[in-house]
Amino acid sequence: MKRRFDIYFPWLFTLTDFLVVLFTLWLADFLLEKLGILNEIAFFAYLPLAGAWLLISVLRKDYKIGRTEDYDHTLSNLGITLFWFLAVMAILWTPLELEENRWLQMLGFGSLLLIFMGSFRVGTHMALRVYRIQGKNYRNAVIVGKGGTSPRLADVFRIRKDFGINFLGYFDDLADCNQTRGGISTFFEQAPRLDLDLIYIHEHLEPGLVKKVIDFADENYIKVKMIPGGSLQLEKNLSFSRYGDFFVINVNDIPLDHPINSLAKRAFDLMFASLVTLFILSWLIPLVGILIKMESKGPIFFIQKRNGVNNRVFNCLKFRSMTPNDYADTQQATKNDPRVTRIGAFLRNTSLDEMPQFLNVLSGDMSIVGPRPHTIPMNETFKTQIERYNSRHKIRPGITGLAQVRGYRGEIENPHQIRSRVRLDYFYINNWSFLLDMEIMVKTVYELIFNRENAY
Image (cartoon, rainbow, N blue to C red; front, side):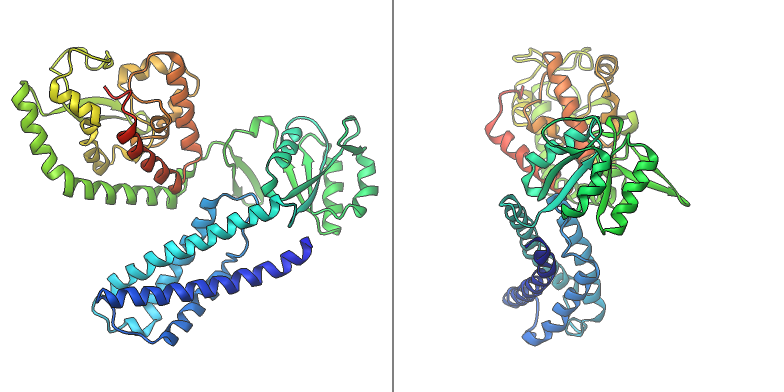
């Protein structure tokens, strides 16, 4: 059954992908016509366009949905396919050559394709996981060598049934647990009868034995993977650099080190911050400025030095919510703080005091989502108390962040709170994805509406 699935799934996926893209193109045509953006185009004119999608998708092997990959990887693959498809559409598809609103039409087609094809592909990915949880489309695997981190891998196979990896046991000369099938020499006797797909090799196995296992796997068309030791299990995705024929492991790369990821995040920040500045800050700053001036003397903005990316100091903007005082940098705001003005209390309670930070986003000092920046004195204190504290400055600080939507916002009252913040910031930095940013933004809106407990 597992072999048959591998034969038929690529064909089934490709055919369904073709039908879904054809339907999406027809629907986009229908909607754009109704909006008066596109002139009527015959349905058959979309067949070669759907064929182009099919060709790009097959060449890029989109039908290969990795069993251990997350949904954002599926969407990332879709994004690249969509980019090439829209390029082909813009250059070669003749029905759009004479259209007046060509780029608006391209935007309409691209948006609907992203929504419908994204839904189809993520839905397919989810269906595959459910299918594997039921014990189908599995891979037989063994671990040669027990100890170190190999039991953790066996636990992953046991817990993550959606990976579809059927763990058959260990081969090790010393281990005697109930999952041990025999010594390492026994492996070469039993393996031909086990219908193996994957062999995981413990990192401390003797080099000559490792070569023997790999040679055996090559002769029997079995995939081999090495299990990194504890020093490399850093809760992050490892990448590799090649120097001619020599490979090294990049142990502290982060997703935003990749130029495409960094560009995508920055492009979204600029677009979103520009819209907020144009449609909200353009009238909010004068209005709030008048209210602040009416209540107390002093500037409209509170400008505070904070640490940003690579610990670079920048001027963080906020609406002034306190009477001018000498303790703003060293003393956190507390509940019923006498320094907070009436308009300031409203601004802080609604988080409107943070709105000018969208100007920091435009200037490149901040991002929409990222670790919240702390004051310089707070940074100097925390970095001596908390391990890996400075790692949160690998990327631009954010207006909102994962720690804030998980309940760690506002005043820091005990060491547990700042440690939890740093732990969540570290997770975000090492597991960044565009979908994670969207999730945090949605949860931020929810927190602003329904959870105001720590906003003071």
